[in-house]
Every structure is written in structure tokens, then in C-alpha cells.
Image (tube, rainbow, N blue to C red; front, side, top):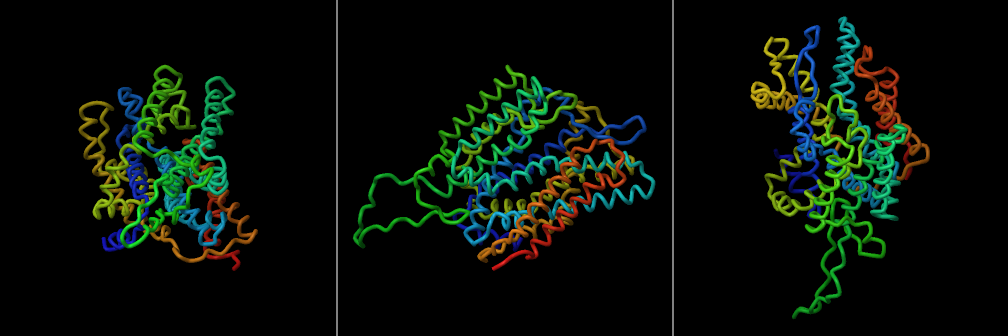
Length: 484
């Protein structure tokens, strides 16, 4: 608590606290959403299994328009990435150095998860457990890596995409939305391969809006033609520049306006009504499913890859975010709520990465002692089990976060105020190669079939590539390849 109090006291006056709140809420909703729709059953061999209840809860499909909060995560990610990139460049750093620094917060907690799961899989294999069963458990535990792959990709593209944003502004996400629409046509009419780019284009579009939000905060519009009136003490001095996490704002200039995201309440209403209208057209009248989360046995999935319907939901969610901004900022001006937000953000990735492992551990424990309930979905018994289920899962996750959370918390400490040396070409190339190896390895793991016989839970080449890439990034963070 003392550290949280110290961090709260050191919070810059211009920090966009609302972004931190949205990140914490998004991950919390993902965790409780996954847990809430989990159905536990048994296969033909009597083994405990799990699947999503959404296939049996059709009435809940519209609720997924709020429950699918990955767009919020990418929106605030765009804001945070723009802020940190701008801040590091102000200290003399470059894009390669930024990517190396950013990788610490993302890769180290992920490495911890993979190493623990791989070691557990190896022990199970040596004890004679079927490799197919090992892969099934590993696959379930690493479902969060699906979204992490996409986020790691947009992080790597932040330097060039932010430069493109500063040149073309909101035209960039509009082009990306058009590309998503083209991919949707491929999914509906063929060839399906045309839609594969949507895994990147869809999340990039939302991420770019985060850039625009950052610029709206960092470069406020001019005050207008009014001239400050002199006082008895003399002419009024201009007000001090507003600041945010990225540093002081810059004066308005030609071209800045088109980079800004409209953030007024009126803009919020436009985004909300426009997004809601578009999603109704695309789902109720159009070809896309109403549910924005994966539904078993559905041919189309709005999130894999992102569809126009999901982007319409993202627009509506942005409207809600803008409408609630005022009350949220007043709440976050109080010490208690802000300390809570800081605490969650210190371990937010750990919470996300380990929440399904918590479910596996709880299911295994209850099954081992013969007390695992398996009520049918949407029955009174199933609903009655939701509250104790969520409480028990929360307790298990708290233990896991207490054990593994410090890895992420230490990774998030910045060397504020220090001048960052520029990278050599070899250091920059190594950073790109290491980061690419990490992303490729996680992608291979996520696309490997659930029932593949993998003694270590994941393909060995993917594991080797990941460890090599993470090792290179760790070496670079230690200072190899710098000059100055």
C-alpha cells in the first residue's frame, strides 16, 4: 500500500488517468467474462472438460457488444504507445530503443507463463500423461496469447504507424476499415484468404484511434481570438502548457486538427449512435453474427478475424467512453480509486495471462477431491454455481498474481529522466529479429491444433524460437549494441 501511495503522489498532473482506468476495466471484464460463460462437463472417458456457454445462451448475444472489450484494450494501447514513444524520443531515444524497452513489460510476464506451463507439461509427460491431453490443457491455458500476438504486432508497428498518423491523421484508420471490409467480402464470398489481413488491419484501426486520442490530449485546440485582459499587476501571462504522459503539449499548427480524435460529449453521442446503427445493420439485417465473442459451431466469428461488425461495436464503445469521461475523471481525482487503478495496472498483463490457468487449477483441485459440480448450462443449478465459481476463481488468481505479478511490476519501472542512447544498426536489426521471433513463436502456438500430440504442450521449434527471441531482447535491454 505504501508503494501505491507513493506512485499516486508522483502521478504527473497532466496524466490521462482515464486511460489507465479503461485498461484495468477491460482486462477485468475479459477475465470475468471468460469465467462466467465457462461450462464444465465430462467427456466419454470421464475427464473434466470445459467449453463456452454462449451456444446455449442466445438471449445473451447482444450483451457481448459490451462484454467484447478487446477494442478498448487496443484503443488505450494506442494512446499509451504514442505517449511512451513520444516521451522516449524526447530523451534522445529511437524506434529500436523504444521497442526494446516496450518488450520488457510484454515479454517478461509472457515468458514466465510459458516457462511454467512448459515445465509442468514436461513433468506430466515424464509421468506418462498422454501428449494429446497435455496439449489440450496447454492450449486452454494459452488462449489469451491469441490477442497478445495481435497486440505485440501492433506494438512493433507503432513507430511507422505513428509517423503515418502524424502525416495523414484519421485518414489512416478509415483506410484500414476499408481493408477490413474487403476482407469481410472475402470471408463471405471467397477467397477466404483475403480476410487473413483483418487480424492486423482491424486491431490497427482501433490502435490508430488511440494515437488520435493522444494527440487530442497533447495538442489542445487554440483558445480562439479572445485576447487576455490586463490586470493591475500588468498584462496577463499565457497559461502554462498542458502536459500528459508524453510530455508538454505543442502549439496548434496546420495539420494538427486532422490528427485529433473528437472527444466532446457531442462526438460521444455521434460515435455511440453511429456505431449502434451500423452494428444493427450488419448483424440483424446483414450477414454477421449478433455475438461479438466466439460461439461454438458458428461459421462466422466477428473477432477472429475482426469484422466490420466488431469495428462498429468499437465505435459505439468509444462513444460510451467519451460520454463517461467526465464522471470517471472526477472519481479518479480521489486518492483511493486512483490507487486501486494503479495497483491493477501494475499486474494487468499477469491477470490476463494467468486467468485461464486459474480455472484449470481450480477444476483440477475440485475434481481431485470429488466436489466438481457439472450442472447443465442455463439451469437453476448452473446459475447458482456462478457466484461461488467466480469467488473461488478470484481467490486462485490472487495467489497466482501474488507469485508471478512482481515480474511484471518490476518490468514496468521506467528510467525516467535519463537520456536514452541511440541504437547501432546491429542493435536495431537484433531488436527486430528478436521481437519477430517472439511473435512468430506465439502465433505458431496459437494456430497449432488443440488436439495435437505435443509432449511439451507447444511445438518444440516454436518454443526454441520464442526463447531465442526473448533472450536476444533481454540481452539488448542490458545495454548491448548502444553508443553514446
